[in-house]
Length: 276
Image (cartoon, rainbow, N blue to C red; front, side):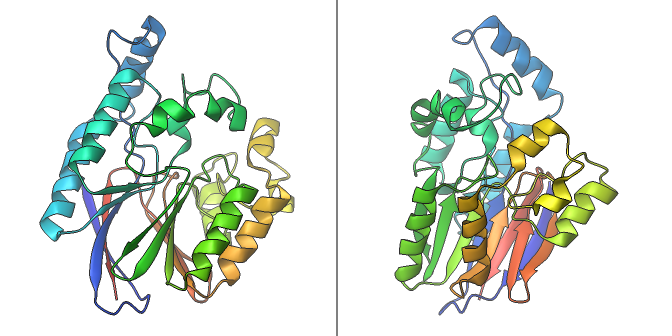
């Protein structure tokens, strides 16, 4: 387990701590699931070994710090009875504030195009495993409003944007917790040039920078007008103080604007964040 300590200035009246993790990718399945899903669990567990022990270690770190756990998605790798049972028990047993990742709704991992219709096949069942609304929720911690938004399909929807604007009107400093990082040039360059990926896997990437994306990835990640409006709101709203994200499976700290940091936390990293 890798541990990073981060300090974020949000103007908190009293300093406090949260523990941020992302992309655990639990790979459980049992006899209640079909044979295909059990085979999937075996294959995917190779990519995410010791996911459960990491999650418990992260929870212990949060407990020792007297801090809530903030998870930015992909707690589970795919929808299964065993994964959802484990997620439910974990969230009931620990103080965990959750934002959805795309794998929260993945039925067989990559078998179909992921859009709202695909997500809605499992949304009600998946939501039942978590203690907050994983598509949009807010929670005051230490005088700071943590707002979780599901942007795991690279988009923010109109209802989510309007709810974010209502959260702004409450007047508290805001920390956004989302699965997919918002585009910025350093992240784009890192993913495309250093990681040599076919696309950057970011929300609201400018279309000219997507010209070389494979057709499937372009369709998946091309921002719509509401998403671009949301990105502009996020980067221009003074009350939004920081973004906590995941999805890329790496640890990266970037600045979206001169005053707005974005922190990407990797799949086996515990980020202990002190807010001051």
